[in-house]
Image (cartoon, rainbow, N blue to C red):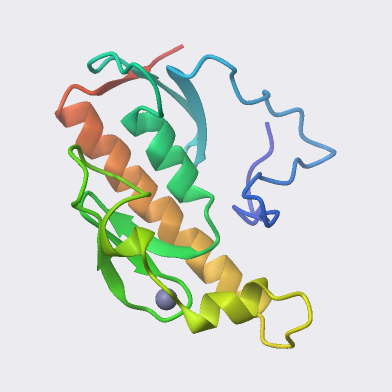
Length: 159
Ligand SMILES: [Zn+2]
């Protein structure tokens, strides 16, 4: 499959990757334990093997959500860097790592993000900025996946 030279991420506002018409990429799995990631080495699949959760998203789902959240510039186990204002915000108010609806990030009021999300505002991130954020998020995601493998929360699936 041809992935050479492709821009890694053209993201819709809702965070879904835009499918390339020429590439028959597998559809996202409906099984919340199994996730497929497009990485620099091709498609890689991970399965969540951590403690079962009653509701909400497991850490693999949260990492995946953060990796396509255009408000996020980069993230770590306990912080999110805002794409709008470049501030690092703590996400430690909930148990567990890689929380994206917690801490000062969850209550972050960002005038820059507000402008970006306002359809009538002329202030938007440039395509170069958006591509840069997408690249940083992909790096954060890859570090998170490696971290979670090490912590035995997820396992990489080899074909
Ligand atoms: Zn901000």
